[in-house]
Every structure is written in structure tokens, then in C-alpha cells.
Amino acid sequence: MADHEAYGDRRDAMSGGSAGAGGDSAGSSGTARTSGAHRPTLVVVSGPPGSGKTTMAGLLAQALPCPLVSRDAINEGIFHTFGHDLAVADKESVARLTFDAFFQTIDLLLSSKVTVVAEAAFQHRRWRLGLDSLKAEADIKVVHCVIDLELARRRVTERRRERPDSPSSRRAELARHTGTGARTVSGFEEVSLAVPTLRVATAKGYDPGVEAIIDFIRS
Image 1 (cartoon, rainbow, N blue to C red):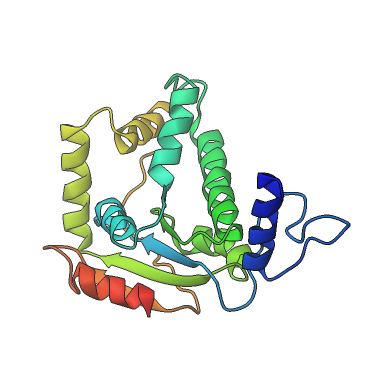
Image 2: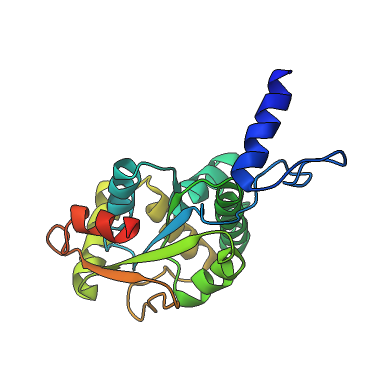
């Protein structure tokens, strides 16, 4: 049996289907759609800017282990494509490209039965819009970072001062360039979905700790 045929048989077994004579059960995309008891987990790490999401998401992805999909990393990659030209990469077009790429990447991984940590500072409406179509693909667990908003603002200000070339600093510059104003921490609407959710205080370390968070994800 050729290697690609053996791979197809294994993939069909994992997806709970059979290729048959007319093609593979995963469809033309070649991915194994989620079925049966073997569902990947989508760990949503949310919270306002400055709440420690990125650091936490990295720790969780390393501990599980699994891929990490970061909204800011995708955003930075788009800026790189446009040569960091703020006159070309306007706020709305970059935000739209980032949102689409973020959730399309998550969908691709989940449909291939890959557990994923996804991290972004989206507020409730944006998360809901992106996650609604993914509920059938995975078991979603939300880890929400909780912090005093004034402390979060100070963290963001300090980070931009220390790293003027960072993604968040570029977004602030882009907002000033277009006259739309920078995104603020105040009034942040926490993601609220009918899925298991753990709120983690991040002002001083993590409460509950990383081990407890991992237990929550694996439960």
C-alpha cells in the first residue's frame, strides 16, 4: 500500500468515517471533521489589554501542549506584509484581515482535531461572532483574565514606552494617524458564552494558579 493510501486509512479511522470509492469522508479539504467522542478543545484566553493574556496563553499552550493562535501575532504579520506603512495598512482593513485570519486558522486546526489555545483582546460581540460557527467542532473553555482597569492601563502605557515598535504600539500609532483614537481599556465587555468559564486574577501572578487552570481545561 502506498504511503498516501495508508495515511488516508488512518485519517478515516480517526475521523470515524470511511473514504469509500467516491472520495474521502473528510471532504475536498482533506481534514477530518470532528465526530464522536474525540473532540479537540478550544481554550479561549480573553481579557482587556494589559491583563496578561499573552503571557498566560503562552504558558497554557506550552503546558498542554498545543498550538497557540495569537491575534496580535497575526496582526503583526499583516503589518509586516504591508511594510508597516500606516498609510496603506489602515485600521479597518488590518482589523478585518486579522479577524478573518484568526478564526480561519482556528477552524482549520479544530477541523483537523488539533486542540488550540486562542488569545485575543476581543470583546464579547467579536468573540461571539467568531466562535458561533466553531461550537460544533470543539469543546470550548474560556479563561478570562481579570484585572483592575487602572492597573491594566498603566501596564499598556509602560509596555508602549518600553517597546515602541511592538504590535500594540503600532496600533496606537495607527489610531493616531487616522484620527480614530487608540483603543482604551475602560468599558471592556467580558466574553460571556454558555461554556465552562474560569476567571483568573492577574494583578500579581495568577489566582488560581497555572496548574489549576490546566486542570480546568482538562476537566
